Amino acid sequence: MTSTPSTLPDGPQDTALPGVRPAVRAVPAYPFTPADVPIKLDQNENPYDFPAELKAEATRRMMERAWNRYPDLHADTLRARVAAYEGWDAGGVVLTPGSNVLIKILTELAGINQTVLTVRPTFSVYTLEASLLGASLVQVPLNEDFSLPVEGLKAALAANPPGVLYITQPHAPTGFVDGVDAVRELVEAARGWVVVIDEAYHEYSDTDYRALVRAHPNALSLRTFSKAWGLAGIRAGYALTSPELAENLQKLVSAFTMNTLTQCALEVALEQPAYVRQRVQEGVRERQRVLDALQAHPTCQALPSQGNFFLLRTPDPQVAYETLLSHGIVIRRQDNLPGLQGCLRIAIGTPAENDALIQAVQALH
Image (cartoon, rainbow, N blue to C red; front, side, top):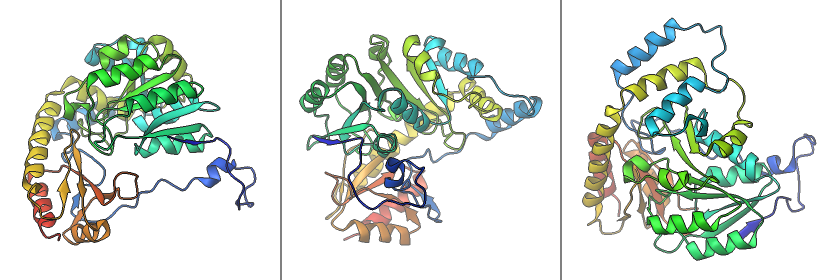
């Protein structure tokens, strides 16, 4: 278990901007550099765009609305539609432009001058926001099979002041899914904490923690329109939680943050969700096909996953990355993360993209 204090160690600082908090100056920018290649498998996106007919309907609605007027203060109309879709109390829904924004305000809500508890490795935004906001970051290493270190996390819950606990199902970046009993045990142990069950990829794993969240007012489910819905460019995520927790979380959401254009697109998507189920089914089939095709590789190991991505463990990740790039495929290196030596993270694409990926991996030695 590692703990990072909210105060930074002594060392050289940028004195040109003394008004900027040291915690902000010390954190590097988000590590992403786009690559201009035909096959993009580096950001766990849905490989298919929003259906053209739904785009047309969303555009029609956008044109009918006044763009010179502010949208709903807290996207109340859209919150009600998300609530109806999820079978949830609208008072317990919070919408923001992407679930990464929710992670930021969750850190503001329960992490500043308190504790952010998660595993290692984990989704980088949890640790980034904890560092930027000066929270005490505590990370417990995953088990060797990537399962949750339940006893280690329970010990950390007991040893640290309350704050926010992140439980990711399926886990990113490994794609591992834990048993319901393990997740329930942690939620029940985290009394006094804000417990976030990040379900960004739940459609691909057929898991659903709404019932557990409903039974625990201090817990919330974090969901997104960026993955299975194929709307990463729209930027929208939401939390499902108790009205009490939602009321406090909403205080940290800027007014009018969900613009009219985004709301139109999401309204249409929520009215016609059948396309999501079809694409998830194809994604799951393709995931299994790719994993099966790579099982016999002599030097690379395709690791099981329940997300729309998987890890490929390679003898030399730099050579593997460059080889795939030479085949017009960009993926994400993860070999700098503890426990993921040699690993690349690869999203599942279209069947044609996956064929190209399989062929390119076969060229690795």
